[in-house]
Length: 332
Image (cartoon, rainbow, N blue to C red; front, top):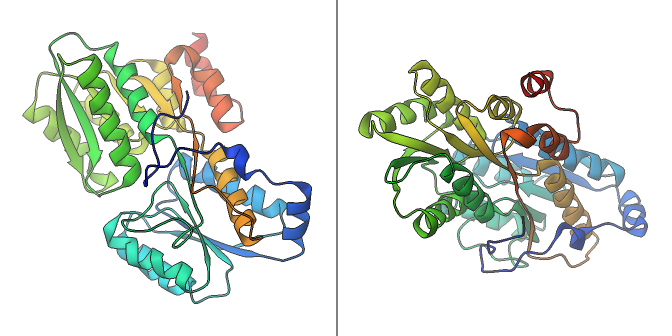
């Protein structure tokens, strides 16, 4: 897939190759003994673990230590407190995935004012500007992921039906992009379908949000869930109620990949490349700490995945063999 979306300030995407490190950059970083803190929205997902693996391996090769990994648990207060503490500490840079937009903007803006290098991952809080407030944003093409989710679902829904969109209640750039592009694709290519939206405030509420969506719209014929962790709760609820509604989502996590291999409910996934994104994040940090210019937005394309290609797609995304469950299902 090519990059279809624009950055938070209308930027065209730069490819990850624009933040590649040369041997001289690695040597210079090793001589400086940099220290970096990582502030994550959550650590409880395959996506986050792969991101952190990409960040850790790249920084480690540059002699740069990760002094701390903060799990914010999608809580804005936790993130604000972590940033307030870290900006006064001995770290040279902070990598952050903002858990919201407006509510965490001030806390992020003060990081650069405190003399710390700030590289954003996936999301830019409201009002923050590149160069002034942060060095670079590294993300997937979330607009493209929403387009892929819509196209993958469309093939499984008959004309004139209702489809559900299960989304996150918090104002979150990457989720907004997926939701907007999903709706635009459907309006352009499947205007016969009516989209019914339900939002969840926390991942723990995804199952109950799915139940409400089914109760309000019992004729639902398809579902798009904005990422895989809440999608798995929706799958559990659908299976418990005996509803075989085709679903697409974003992120090829282990459980989502197994469900896709089955092809019973999950019929398509728009996969990100979290390990490669983590590598690009770490490379942007090193270049910034060495006072080299970096693009304001670096984006990685998504990968549309169907049950037929789930094994090779899993290997491509995770750089490892597919889980035995997937191999067994696909070979049956």
